[in-house]
Amino acid sequence: MNRGIGAWVTKRAFLQGDYTAFVAGERTFTYADADRRTDQLASALAGLGVRRGDRVAALMVNSVEFLETLLACAKLGAIMVPINVRLAAVEVGFILGDSGADVLVFSGQFTDIVRGALTEPGVRVRHAVQVGEGGYERGPSYDELLASASPDFAAADVAGTDTAMLMYTSGTTGRPKGAMLTHDNLLWNAINVLGTEHPLSSRDVTVTVAPMFHIGGLGVHSLPLLYVGGTNVILPNFDPVGTLTAMAEHRATVQFMVPAMWVAITQVPNFGSYDLSSLELAMGGGAPCPLPMIEFLNERGVPFIEGFGMTETAPLVSILNSAHARSKAGSIGRVAMHVEARIVDDDDRDVPTNTVGELVLRGPNIFAGYWMRPEATAEAFRNGWFHTGDLGRMDEEGYITLVDRKKDMIISGGENVYPIEVEQVLFKHPKVADAAVVGGPDPRWGERVVAVVVPDPGAGPDPGSEELVTWCRERLAHFKCPREVHFVDALPRNATGKLLKTVLREKYAGVTDGVVVR
Image (cartoon, rainbow, N blue to C red):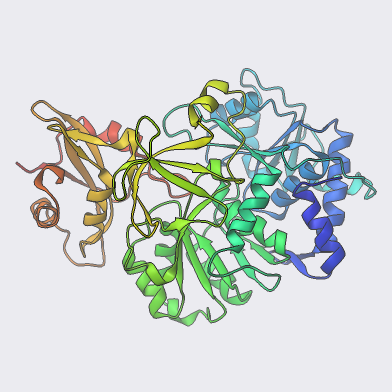
């Protein structure tokens, strides 16, 4: 019996085969279409020698073919390995080699990267399958593979505990690690998503624009909607106007994007001309959501919730409901239905309420471990709990506030400074569009607080460093306030909007060419 996510589309085809599963441009696919096509693709992959437990890598933009590859692998019992399309050839080669992928399915525009990646040491890919045009001639195209395959396919026996995906971490602190997400992890994540303030159903529609090669783009709405029989309208890349157009045209009811995307669409000059009356819930995650952006949507009748998650949790951990967006601003909310959370000290003992400690998690959505990394897995799991590496505190009502990553904490003059606390104060300044805080070496205090700020171009003249430091000193203990301010046009972020603090440390923490405040 197949208990994996591939069975979802088969059951939906049986229950509601004429419902729309995917829309991509002019193409529309029902659940019956999706089931038939993924059967054909599974048959074709089997013809290439793919067996249960084998890895199939995917270097693709958001597409129907991405989801079909995932579902076909699931029907086979194979493991899909999504790869970030922004990576260089050497980085793609590392993931191909580390995962031991036998087959690579890729969007044609990445042909040059694929050619380079396949020459990297340790890569053993036997078949590379191109989706669309791109000039790769060493193997069958995706369409050729699909057309030549038999639709008669018997799904493999797949257990819920089998690995469905190797989702590689962003690698902001070193070589990326493959998080082993099981079929059960993805199932329970979908159930957790259903337990939010807007339970999904087959009537729901979303525009899938956050990258599917990251767990947020895939796990927040795309897979849960397949589970309940809803519709994914798939855009290959994010474009503010294109996204708004698709949301209006297809009557999106739920929408997930990272905060940077939400900010971009709310800044479209004629935002009000797009009919978003069907939108019942907006959701952000991957980075803190600016309160002015949330209020902008609320004023237009759109409730906004914030989600917190990780690659290792498939991803949903907690939700800050729309009713508490202001009263609990800065919190990541309360844990999802089937997630347990504790705040512990260095000896894994629970700390008192409102005391900072490490956030540890337990639940059926928590990953099985890191691929071929037993030491890293053992370090992550202690006493049956997943140690996130995030520092936070929990209040009397169960609301969790993260204060920072353990590694990001600044120790200045013997005092702990949590960058996120300073960043939240900077975010509230009317002339600040974005901000990040890192620690830099200081001969007297050990470390100093360094702020990197993006001024809001629509808020008049840029704020001066003195103005920002004064703003902080009125709201924070002085030892927490920036001693150095750098102004930039944009902060470095990855495809999911995650801030790359390692880049900021390398560029700014060791220099003093910003404006220094004594």
